[in-house]
Image (tube, rainbow, N blue to C red; front, side, top):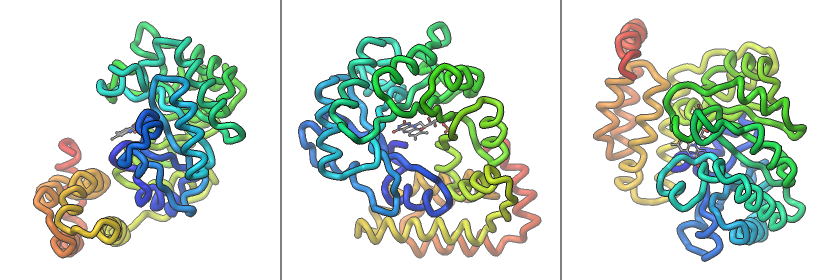
Length: 321
Ligand SMILES: Cc1cc2nc3c(=O)[nH]c(=O)nc-3n(C[C@H](O)[C@H](O)[C@H](O)COP(=O)(O)O)c2cc1C
C-alpha cells in the first residue's frame, strides 16, 4: 500500500505472521529513467522474503525493462503488476485500473513484464472491472493467465467504487473457478474469521490484507491461527503500544530527524488509533505529536486509564472511528 507498506512496516507484518509481502507500487517509468526517489521504493530486507516488487505503468516495453532492471539490482522473489490503482494521477496516464478497460494493452503489459522478468515469477493485482457495467474480472484473469502470469490477486471492487461499498466476493469466487493459477482474494478482510469464511466460500488460494493490516498489523497473528484452526490469544494493549512506539523509534533511527519523522508518522498513528480503544481521544493527541517522548506520554496516559472506561469509551467512539 502506497505510503504505508515501506520496508519497516513489511518487516513487522512478517513478524506478526504475514506469509508474503509486496512493496508499495513503484513507477516503471521512474525505474526506467533511474529516478533516484523511485529507486528507494525498491529497497527491502532479506527478512521480508518472499517479497514482490509491484510495478505500475502503461508502456509494455518500459515495464518489461523496468522489471529486468529491478530484478537485476534487487533480486525480488517475484514481480507484481498493478492493474487496480484507481487514483487519477495513475489512471490518466493509462496505468493501474485503466488497463482493465483496455484488454489488448493489459495483455501487452503482462507479456512485456513476463518477458523482462525471465525466470522470476510475475503476478498481477486486478479489480473486478472498471465500473458496475463492465465487470470483466474473469476475462482479464484468463488473459493474464495466458500471458504467463503465475498468480492473480483480485480486489472485489470496481475502479469506480474506489473504496466505497463492499468487495464482491461472488466475482472473486468466479475468477477462482475460471483460471488454474492461484487466485488471492482481497477486500474487507479484518479478522481471522473473515479470512477463513471467505476462503472456504470462494475457493481462493490465499487472502490479501490491506487496511486491516495498516490499522492493526498484529491482525496477522489471529488470521494465521484461524487458518490453522487454532485459537489466538488476544493481543494486549501493552503489546500494541510496544509495537507503535517501536515503529516510531525505528522510523526515527532510520531517518535521523525526529521532528520530521514524527510529523510524517501522524497519519500512521491515526491508522493505529482505529485498531484501539478510545480512538477519538487518541486521534486528538496524535494530531499534535512531535517527539518520541510525547508519544510515550500518550501511551502511559492511555495505559493508565481504567480498562472499563476504555471499553465504555470504545463503544461511544465506535460509530465515529
Ligand atoms: C492507502 C492505501 C494505499 C494503497 N496502495 C496500493 C498499492 O500501492 N498497490 C496495490 O496493489 N494496492 C494498493 N492499495 C489497495 C489495497 O492493496 C487493497 O486492495 C484495498 O485496500 C482493499 O483491501 P482491504 O479491504 O483489505 O483494505 C492501497 C490501499 C490503501 C488504503
